Figure (spheres, protein in one colour):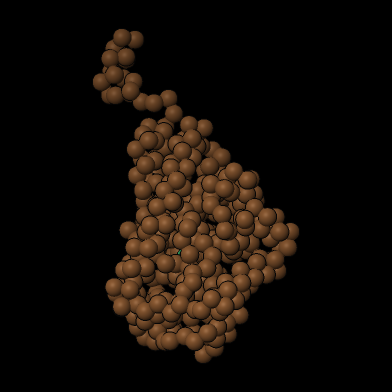
Length: 317
Ligand code: 173
């Protein structure tokens, strides 16, 4: 007996925790190190600090590991355990997900008023994932072009899109083409597109400023980039591991407030890089924003009127 104990100690077995450490494979839909990947990378670091011996995330990589429009499927089926991805990249799995970027309040408000739980339930029921966190609050989207724009007419413009901008672009008469972020530079360079939709942050990350002449102001909607955990994996995690992940999620969401200052810095960098700002006059801007908001909600309503009404009541102030 004594000998066994001594041997076990020598092998380090006595120091082994009662339950094994959980290791989750994490993938981001945005290139590693870029604007919309960084909050997830910071979250991974945080979990790997606070979750020692309990839960760790093995950061596998970005679009080179899983194509961005496939990442929803990958986390839904468990090929990936935890994903950093916007709802605009998984419309096939959650068609009402477009409502998320129509929010005018913050994720903190949504946790408070029960909206977060509703959005979590939709993710669980329709795509087999736990909705863990939302980043991107306070960041708006813009249209960027290579040609001057006059008023609310984009007929003759081919514009790179995701589901975020599609409804608005159709109202403006543009021809939308869905393009992954990693292909936008080449599409611009070749003249295959006359512009693109993208948030105010991140335009310089992949060098798009070199191929961009104009940003249209004002911005519209609000970015949602979400952390999703495969639901079977989530349900099998020990409570202690869930707590580590949930605390790190709240820590991440608290940092969303930094975006207000970063937006200004990014807008200034765009101007320095030679991007001219086209600012619609007050009346045109009002119509533009109303068109964006109405077209966005009309689409979600066309998918499911009840879910649309339910989400609108807790996402819009
Ligand atoms: O334009 C996009 O690819 C898109 O929809 C998006 C959404 C959130 C953050 C960044 C981009």
